[in-house]
Length: 186
Image (cartoon, rainbow, N blue to C red):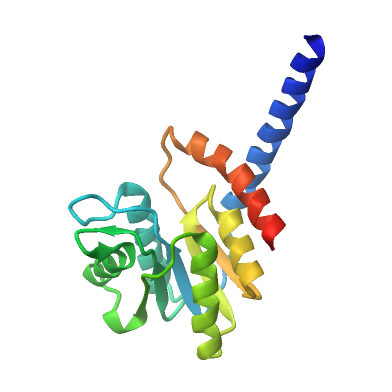
């Protein structure tokens, strides 16, 4: 019984350390000017508006766009409600907040972080773009950066959107196996 307790404590310590490393990595800003910004979807309300997690990502994207961090932005997310995808809702939000429609690329085909990265890379290759600027929550940022790197995006800048609430603890925990899985696939 004592061995199981010790083994359990070791596993808990390793997972806790991994959570801390991923969280701290996600908090680190990688500022720069990129050819394109990218915001992955996070879910929308039943009335077709961005949920709080997504809203802070979009607000951060508007801020970064206004600061000249990137001249165009891809919003990515295929899931949706009432015939509107996450990408549709995200684009409408950005337009409402001053980003010109002609500067927004909608990726309604992406269903996860890896698909977002792959679709962005295809778009970048067609237009000979070299760098991307990722915007997502701090706990998701390491996996987003890894997915972009695995897709072949060589230069990735990033800035984390802040919205802290209790379920983030679960989200940080969930990122440990998710990151490991992406790292393994890469």
